[in-house]
Length: 259
Image 1 (tube, rainbow, N blue to C red):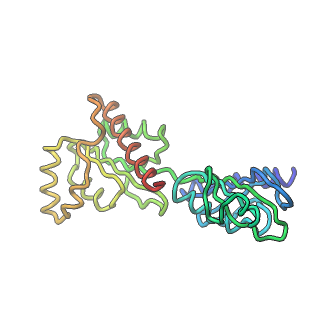
Image 2 (tube, rainbow, N blue to C red):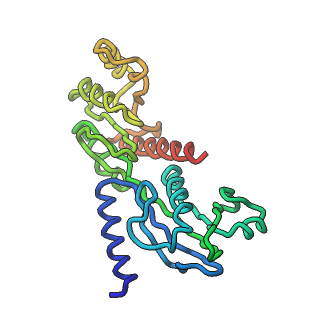
Image 3 (tube, rainbow, N blue to C red):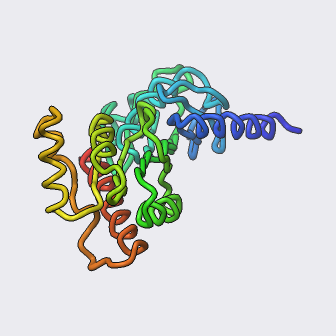
């Protein structure tokens, strides 16, 4: 086994471990070099949530700071980054300075004596959003069946998501412990919370929640009825409408971060 093959195998093991722990990481790959550089195209590294290299190699210290900054930006935006570590005189010829972005490339200064250029593509791997589905109703069961196909991490009991993991909650108890489920869901303070039921039914529950000391601002955050209005009738159709709304909300949040 060659060193490259061993590194790839070990890298895959570490990546799988981070996935299982729902921790963000990124792959960094050198896609182009010019001039004298220690690492060549195809060199890879696995980066942790703070941009530290866990496995692999990208050359000397010339690229490390730029890679770390780009990785942190990739985690924040949820989108890949292309960073070009370039000598200062070549940056001037391009009419850019360190930190500028042009044509999808972020430029960084290479201050090493080698004076080479290294272009590095950074691909973030973020934890899947946590979807907590409360209830055993047909709608709840349909959501649990469909959601994994859209890359949601589904759970049935309240638990703390990781620091990089958004939490979405759907209360689909449908008459079986609605009040207690809503109360526990609100206490989780999720990114998104929806109730499967009519507005009239939720209005009655909202009054009980207020009497129990829940703040109106928290009560008002609950989406009801859950899901987009697609004329859904069957449990599967209702589940589909809810998942459509979940995708809409998560994509909107990602776009807002990128803007």
